[in-house]
Image (tube, rainbow, N blue to C red):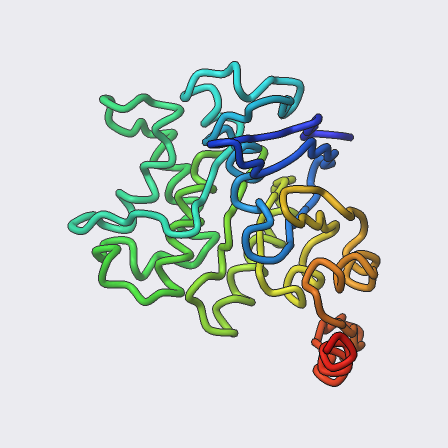
Length: 267
């Protein structure tokens, strides 16, 4: 069942087209990752999908609701957005920070209800953050802090989470930990995930489907295994890419020799 509909979405700022006529369909409990080279429009697209940024034209519907027509509180009950560099205030415990995700349900000026506290405690337990619950968020390591940011988004209890480069700054183990947590939430709680990732191997291994952007245009979309093997992917990155099967997982690697040959032939 289609949960997110993106129809002819475009955004132009100062005569510069950031995204151009992008249309996507994302199913309930599906993970779609947006990939593409720097400047392709990935962040712009997911910000528009989440309602953080308003498009110049086109429409985004989540569960039938036009995101641009929702007030902030109603939108926050429908979709949670995690930016690439979230602001984490000092002097706030992990428990209180995760509790900020409940604002859409209890309001800004009201204290957390008993039901809100139960929801926060449940998320903290699911993400194994219990030992850190009373710690100041800023004292945590990068991997721990990323889990806390994800916990806040999950505490919103929305059907959709949109994440812009959720593995930024994490080492390899913590990247896998973060993405595995998302995969588990999809499986156990019917979560729908829209994300951006620079790492093509991780994108291909974790996402159900990929959407490939280049210069603001959607140039390919489909099952991850198909997109990572597409000619369009190599063209977008302007280099030859190979996919190697490692224990049943696709690993995307650049073919340096092919790149050098192309460059030399141009000269």
